[in-house]
Image (cartoon, rainbow, N blue to C red):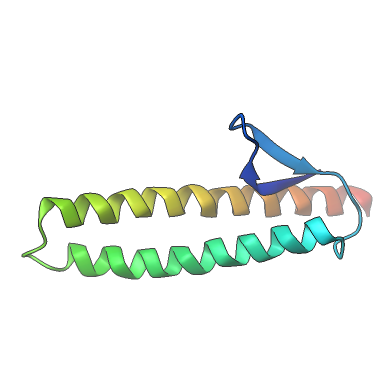
Length: 93
């Protein structure tokens, strides 16, 4: 079971059950994960810039922290998904 990089309407995790990494849903999940990781890199760079600016106001810091928390959640979900995939692959060998 692959943990997908999004949740259902009820906020619960979504899983994909397939052995086909080239299925439409698998490729979509790969694309979403890649976009989330790329976004996290941009958020990290922006947060570093805000934190390095002694003139940054509270709103800028709160915005940077909010985006960083969102991105961290996405990155942890991708890591958990990939960790589970690795566990499944290892158990098959």
